[in-house]
Length: 28
Image (tube, rainbow, N blue to C red):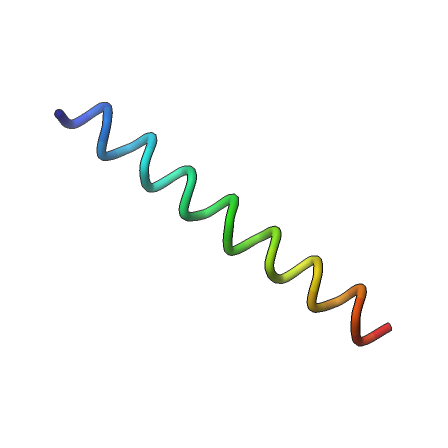
């Protein structure tokens, strides 16, 4: 259960980073 939670958190983090990079690409 704990491991699954950590992996879910990692996915969330990667998603946010992807959104940020896309946003940066759009701006610049």
